[in-house]
Image 1 (cartoon, rainbow, N blue to C red):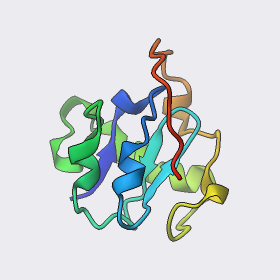
Image 2 (cartoon, helix red, strand yellow; image 1 turned 135 degrees about the vertical axis):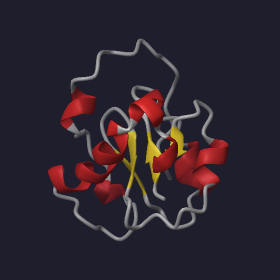
Image 3 (cartoon, helix red, strand yellow; image 1 turned 90 degrees about the vertical axis):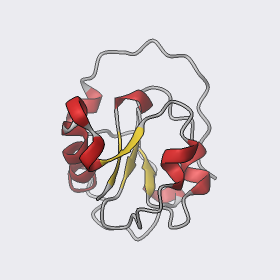
Image 4 (cartoon, rainbow, N blue to C red; image 1 turned 60 degrees about the vertical axis):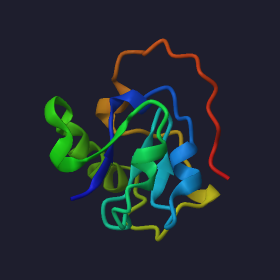
Length: 115
């Protein structure tokens, strides 16, 4: 099972998940974070701390099952591939096309960048 970030993260990007990830497998795009499915060790820490409940195991996605592919495909579409852990150089303003086209959520919560 892979952990996946869903639509609740779009335009919020709280960043709490990035601070607890022991392997730095959560990457920042323009409108949301993405979990690298190969780098993730499936510990579940990110899921327990996400304040907007945006993270689930792929077999628990229900009507947002498309986000498993969105998280996976993001790394190929952006050219990141398998970078081996988040760094400032892997942060981008690019998003998966589905996320980029997602209607504005109207959320105005401040985002915290990963450190």
